[in-house]
Length: 417
Ligand code: NIG
Ligand code: FE
View 1 (cartoon, rainbow, N blue to C red):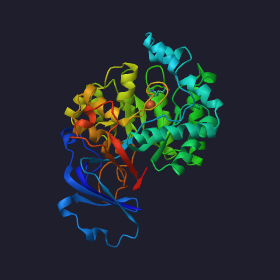
View 2: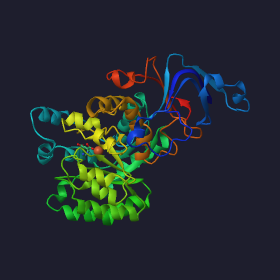
View 3: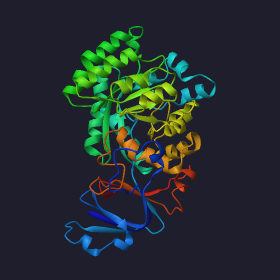
View 4: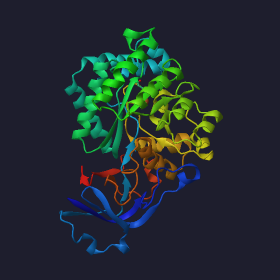
C-alpha cells in the first residue's frame, strides 16, 4: 500500500539533505513546507514538496494501491525516535513513588532494597511470554503518542540467564513490531543482591560471561553502564565498555545523573553513541563533549518525576553542542513514555525553543540510537515513519498543549497503525 498525504498545512522536518544531527545554533533550524504533500511507496518516503509542485504523474508506475489522505488543517511530523527506554519490566513501583513523596531519595530507596533490585526480583520471576505481552502494550502506548522507533535496554535481570531472557524478548519485539527497535545490554544497571559487596566480581561476570554470551546470540546492538555515584565507577565502566567494543557492541551509557561521576568523560573516551541523563554537566564535561561524536541526551521525564536538577541544556546548546531528548520509560524513575510530554518539558524546564526541542526528539534522538540514516526527518529514501496531527494552529502548539495527545494517525513503514 502506498500513501499520498495531500494539503498538509505544514510538513515538519522536511529536509532533502539533513546530515547526521543538528548542533548549537543549527538546532534552531527546522525546515518546514507549508501546504505540502508527502508520498510514501513501499514503506519509504518517495517524494514530498509544496502542493503547487504535486503532479499526478508522480503516481504513475506505482504498483501498489495508493491511499489518499486529505490532511487539511493538520501537520505531518516524522515519528519520534525514543533513544532510551526500559520497557521490559514486570510490575509497577508506585509504593516507592509514595516513599519519594515522603522525602526519600532515589539512592535511599535503592539502599533499602527497593529501586532497580525490586524490579529485578519481579523480572526474574516472570516468563518470557509475560514480559513480551506487557512490553507489547507499552509499545502500543508509546506509538499512540507518536513514537516510531525505540531503543530498549535490559538491566532488570542482572545475571546471564535473565539478561538474555530480556534481550530475547526485545528480539521478539523487533521481529513482530512495526516500530524500529534497538537493543541495549545494561547488565551493569546495579549490583545484584547475590553480589552485594562484591562489585568487582559482578563486573568480571559481565565481562567474562554475559557479554560473550549476548554477542554469540547477536542479541544486542549497544552496551550500557549506569556510571554514577553509588552504582558503577568510571573504572568499572571502562572495563565493560572495552569488552563490549571487542564484541561489537557500541557504548551508550547512563552518566552524571546523581553527581559529577566522570561518566561523561569515560563515555566520550570510548566514543559512546550517547551519554544519557547528564544532570551534572559542568564546563569540564561540556569541553569534553565538544568535538566528540557522542550525543548528549537529556531525559526530562526522569528528572521531572524524581524532582532532580535539570541538565543545563541551554548552556550546552549555546556552547555549540547538540542535544537529544528521550523518554526513559521505566517503572522506577519515569513511568511514562510519552514523547509529546518530553517535548513540552524540553521547552518548559530546559528553555529549548520548539524548533530545538523538535530536533531533539527526531533527528538528534535518531542519531543517539544510530538510525539517523533511515529515520528522524522527512527525506526521500528514509523509512516512512510519520504522524498526522489533529488540527493544530502552529508547531509551537505541540509543546504548548502539554497534556493533550496531538497525534491523530501514525504511519510506520508507510502503513497506517
Ligand atoms: O534511566 N538511572 C538508572 N536507571 C533508570 C531507572 C531504573 C529504575 O529505577 O528502575 C533510569 O532512570
Ligand atoms: Fe535509563
